[in-house]
Picture 1 (tube, rainbow, N blue to C red):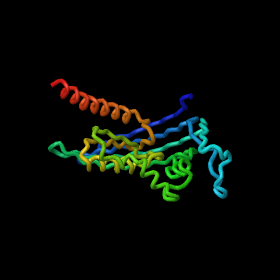
Picture 2 (tube, one colour; picture 1 turned 30 degrees about the vertical axis):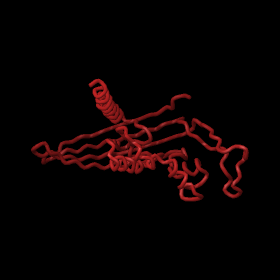
Picture 3 (cartoon, rainbow, N blue to C red; picture 1 turned 135 degrees about the horizontal axis):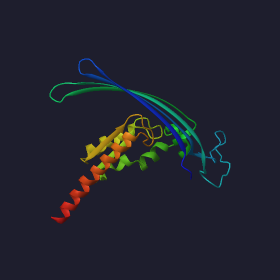
Picture 4 (tube, one colour; picture 1 turned 90 degrees about the vertical axis):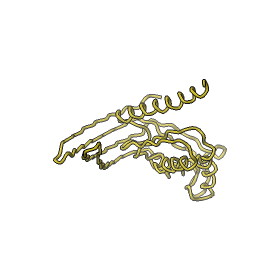
Length: 214
């Protein structure tokens, strides 16, 4: 596969305000062309419920014609106090235009399981396969990360799994990245994720090595 082309433009403005306050405004525009999307070409007819090729189930066609335009404005106001105290408030506005059907969460599930999640017993099947169902068996410390603008996987899922891991006593850290979708693009977020990942591995691998050698 050929790596899709993407153009990204960023601009930012920072200004000092009275009373030890600061204003930061960032703008991001990203246009990805020729990205890959998967289309089920053996989808059931909505009236007859029959597939064009009845001897097969799902047939995926990978097509390099996805086109995504993403725009975001990020506004942050911060105020510094004495004693190393800081107040921060932020707001993010995003807009995206995507011709990939998988960007709509429930449409993806309907394509994958031949029906909407709350019909035909599909919810029971999803629960049987859900990671959160087996969370009480997790023993390994976990670091979770998610983009706030992920349109393929609902950000609420990472919050539910994070809470469940905390409930059963597993050491867990959750990272949420503003303006990011299903995969990180902004360089500062990529760098932050790599730094935190390395620190996480060093912390737990070193701890394991120490226990084994003592």
